[in-house]
Length: 488
Image 1 (cartoon, one colour):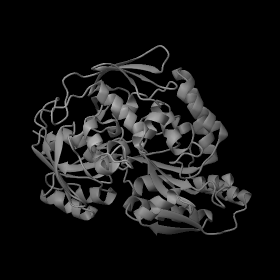
Image 2 (tube, rainbow, N blue to C red):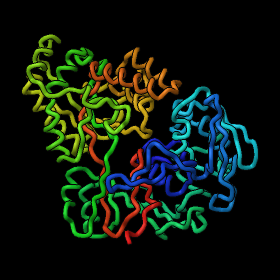
Image 3 (cartoon, rainbow, N blue to C red):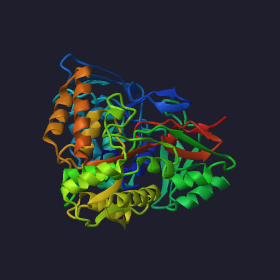
Image 4 (cartoon, helix red, strand yellow):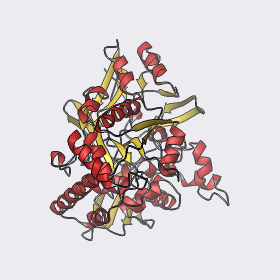
């Protein structure tokens, strides 16, 4: 875990731990879909927020905090807790800051109206203001712990919170931690939703996916996270093991460096998109447990225009476009994260498919750290296999983190003035029909520009012993292990 500080956690492993020990304002309610339990992406229910109303101006929110909730030592959770959380997030450089300023458009701390009531005012309307509060960055933290550990150089005690959990607010307490080995949590007896089902939960850090498979098979662990296609195949039919899967909004793509020669040539990017054998990847990499991704909005979104867009394999068209682009046979480099087995399989099939069209590709394997660095550094990759999961299922969120000009997550360095205009208009447009029209236009522009090769939406899978139940699939695909319970 890179940090225990809710304000500043950017990686999945940190969120697993944070959701054990801290309470957040809202959650997506659980519904059944095709036999799976999911958090409804189109609805919210309150946790430490009891209720909220938005005024006719679309920017003023009256929020009521649920009375009677406390931190682990009995300190009340109230309106001042929320005001302090928002002020701290606004003044620290992390995910909480980004969500408030770029998704909720909240740039000032709220006003406390009473012990359990406050007013939050945004700079402009957003369809996702309240959804932004379901992230762990909005956790209820104890201001007195921050004050006790702050320094002149670190006024918000972020260095202390990076390594420590003191007086949390969630269903479990962190009782011990050995960095890079294990974390041990114990149930908080007075948790307001009821004491958790398990007295004790141990996170074991096991870098080898193959070893995690063996531990699960033997019953030495109850849940194994971070497994890939090969590991799930090895667990098929294993005695006492369940593989739970749900449709996912996760988008697997090959980024094409829009500012890296020769891929700055749109015609060459289109040729590459026609050369890929998409069905081969769906069948042989994901073994049928994935859907085709045809554009920048996941296929389960009501905003997706689905089969109206996208590339299908057409070698003749690919060769025509190669000639038009002036491609002269130079070798293109495809970079992959060496820790991702599916990405290596994709790379090999991509290389083979492009060879048939007359495009030469070499595969470059990078360590996870170097791969992450080169996504954003000066030495940008020409082509790379990557994934993007929109944690909020709205096209404004998706495009503004992956494909808006100049944003951090736009690793392919794509830029379209018209797409940027649509993103800006989408934030303030309240008419649902007009938003559908806008984002249909954006999808057509982006697919024509071919900044990515749009590949697949693989199902999310999690492996656990058949004695464990309670898994709910949330839009951000972070398993809330605190909700797990005996299957019986």
